[in-house]
Length: 291
Ligand SMILES: [Fe+2]
Image (cartoon, rainbow, N blue to C red; front, side, top):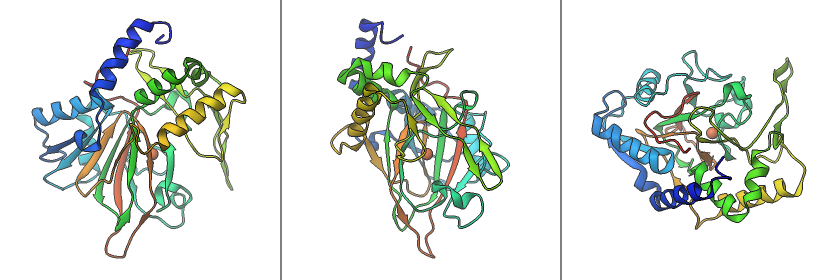
């Protein structure tokens, strides 16, 4: 729809680029605590989400547990939580280095780096993740830095480079994730879908993406390849719109599932990185939707 409305797109693009932050520091809001958010603090967080589809909050009261994460997320209309494979019963994951077991098979539960992706890029269309809350209880002794990018900025960059890149990324067979199998059998069937699509109700831009070299089957044509190369260049550009930060204890990121990566990190016996993660099928309520 955006591709056909050139005037509307130009107007939206100008506003978006004008308000997009130059640094992660512009997205930080100090709050009292996860469970006692005052209206002004909530408004500040929503203002950041309107600029960049994400906000970083910093709690004065560092008390945090899984229930508090859900209460905080609920303040922003995030209630339909993803009970995925490695989450606890209430759907909130505890990201910390885990050896062995099911969690030990997955990179988020290791100290290895994570390449660029949106969360749940491997989910089928009925379980597409719209929002994520990451809350840092303890940062690593070294490393564990995140880079993030609003998918709307990626869209603009790609469309400016070549509008056909958008069409390539909207193709329903653009990106396939093969079935996930372990020794016990198939955990998840293969999932094929676009990189970009639009929410059926709000018209908001949605994105699924993974930079992983293994286990992703891309549509095999020149435009898809060129679009991927263009996105890779953008995400790797040190002087571009990518924002970088390391969450400190009591800080968190709330986002409409923005693009992100994570550097490798080092734990010590005294300092072991611990991050809560909750993922939702809702998007942040009160955040303007692109239409
Ligand atoms: Fe992630």
